[in-house]
Image: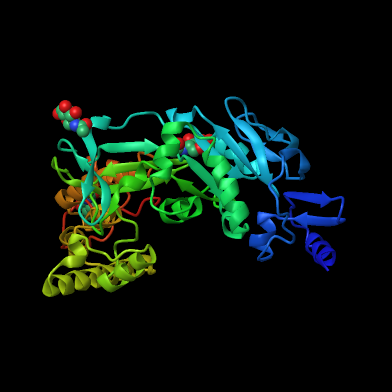
Length: 439
Ligand SMILES: *[C@@H]1O[C@H](CO)[C@@H](O)[C@H](O)[C@H]1NC(C)=O
Ligand SMILES: *[C@@H]1O[C@H](CO)[C@@H](O)[C@H](O)[C@H]1NC(C)=O
Ligand SMILES: *[C@@H]1O[C@H](CO)[C@@H](O)[C@H](O)[C@H]1NC(C)=O
């Protein structure tokens, strides 16, 4: 039965990442993330029930194109160089790889050979964050340990760039037998340097699995390919408590978790991130946070009834206004019905709602709209703000950063300048311009 299923799956031509034969039972066990995600096999077709040494696994992964070396890497060469160790302690194709030195705090992976190879190749972040004495740990009533500013932390300052202590491929995390899984996770944690292991174990959750569930972030080691989804645990980041209107924004770049201040934070204020997408009405935010296992008690969730209703109204208005702007911009006449005030209104709503972690798109839209109507002062003002917000929220490689910077410096040279200006209205310079090559 299992064999037949295996053969039929094989004939679909999907890539098998590993298989194992049991000499005693003549059983072939196969567990491939690709199969599970793309062919929707919910369980590994057969799961071995013990953790095995690495040699028992035959890797038949596809070759991998190496951009730097400009050559294909055959699967047998998915080797990690020292100080990386592994593969060790495998369960089907998922093995432990560890590096006690990387980033100064060490890292351990539970993943397939190809993903380990890719993960180990990512650049380690440069250490340009604020000094560690700029914040300290403190017990926060009702929330456990939190981090608090020890000086004014300025908007745009990077709190830290962290590498994960543990990186676990999503497939074994979801599919493994809980006992085997916890055993494998325990063996992995034991390979971390002691101070990192302590920080890891301090995170919320009774088991290592629960700690990952509660604290980990999802990232991909191979573009956005489903089978390269991993859970990444950053014990330092776990110390930030939740706020629906946080003072920190975070982003994941390759393996690195980067936290940035989105407003000036006075000494004594707690540093917070949002565990959810904050641009939702209160009832929605609360239901999402209940899934995280707590009742939202942040300032935004404990507003008076009137303020709370006003906040929900703003959230709805923002969505409506954004949809209106989007649909008008996309229409054939390129926003004939757009009015310049729409840009100003959008920014006003975002600021009133204190959505400081999501300002880049609002400023960008506003700057473009004002530029289209030839309003130099407002185009400059919002483009300057947009460029700063883009760096905070997406980093210096943000897609629209160059465009906003040039709009701030030279509005009249920007493709968008004056394209909505008609005779007898607005400024003159824009009138004769034809539309440029676009964004
Ligand atoms: C992410 O990793 C790729 C591949 O190693 C590298 O080229 C790129 O610069 C990295 N991106 C960042 C933001 O570190
Ligand atoms: C807070 O900053 C002061 C210097 O301004 C420093 O002496 C102190 O050690 C810092 N506190 C912590 C907990 O890092
Ligand atoms: C726009 O065109 C009008 C007439 O066609 C001309 O007089 C004016 O100088 C032009 N303006 C610019 C900025 O080119």
